[in-house]
Length: 409
Image (cartoon, rainbow, N blue to C red; front, side, top):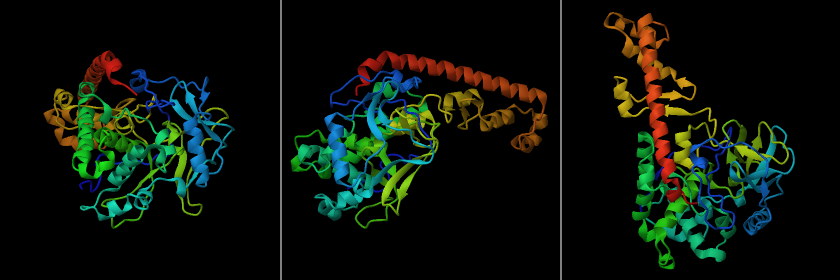
């Protein structure tokens, strides 16, 4: 079995902030719906009105009953459907700054310890070469989904999205419309998921699963772990290969991301619970948010399958063609407020005339060297921004025309 180390990406902690554009699968009854392109590529309206409670839905009733049996206490949050993000958690009462948002006992967390102590434990412990923690969790999710109502974790499996919108699920012609750098990473993600399944078919496809489309299920399991797990460091295990810092957190994973929200999150070793505290608080009946990390929109799309409106961490990546246009070959980026300091420094260096090139260290220190060189660098930056804007608009137009056929929840 392969799978030693990361099969896909470096996961980031879900902490310190949050707005979600809401393109997780939000089907609340297991049926499929079409995901509108605007949920992914445009800024959602941050309205909090017209939310609809989902707490009466059977899957959430069963999920909470399952968690309560494992020691989960009452929470000021309830599942709800919001017009701007889709499925999320609503505050039933005002949550004050630094107040506990949610506390999930260790017994409610699905980790590799859960897997090794389950019916799969003896198989995983005997498998060589040692599987990665990610692979062990994926196999467990596939098996539990196959077992249906008989599965111990079936209430959680039923509450998970049926599919995802991260690049692993995108059709190739849709992925081809992504920016060059993101397209390359999207294809790498597809290859990583495909490799995980093809290299471990004997492990995924046992006799009990021979009638399932295990390739599709392994992709679903990979996205479930990578998009919904929280960061929780575990001790090294002799039966697994690679760093283990995954924990699937039922109910808690319904919290959506917003980049301007701050929270304190982590495992409390005194209470033996994974806890999240809201730094700024949440008003009554509004959606409670967390933060998945200081990620730009390309990273959010790659890792989680959505983009955030008004993301202060947004950057614009320049591909090789644009770099050649700028008479350079380095990779550079700009912030949502304009070209970043690094890009402007590179442009200033390239704009230096022969007579001033000996002052390159002054440019690196941020000093102005020559009025004409500064004007040239600014003109080049404006030209780059114009070209990037036109290329982006053209790509979005192409995506809009194909969205109805490819973005299926």
